[in-house]
Length: 172
Image (tube, rainbow, N blue to C red):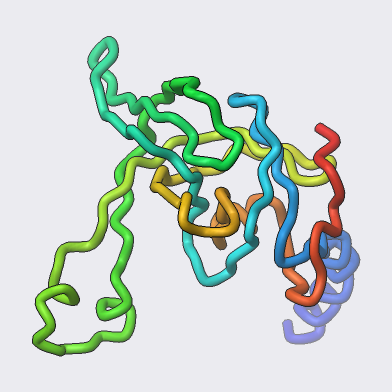
């Protein structure tokens, strides 16, 4: 039985080799076809979900479904209002929850931040995927789009922190 499993492992090995991840830099250009924008994004393995810089975020109902409308909160954004069906609400952990601290600081005891999450198409290099994106105001950050671990898995991405913009401008 052990020999059979070892042989099966060797036969399956080339299939795994074909699944090698694509190597990207710490920062990449991402095209968001649904909103007609290409943004600079930070590839962040420490974040779980992707985040898009948005403002004037408002939840509403349409035909019994939950939706959200927002404007981009980017340097070159106009006043276009975008509307998307709400996929879910995410709870963003605070640093104290992550570390398990028991300090008495009231700020650390606050409930996790809740953010609306939508599904959006993203184009990275020549690969297009639909990923979950939470909406939050990132206008104080250098990059209006953060690509978290879930989206990185969708793109089969490995990140090389010493590189930037390795995929070039999106081609999809």
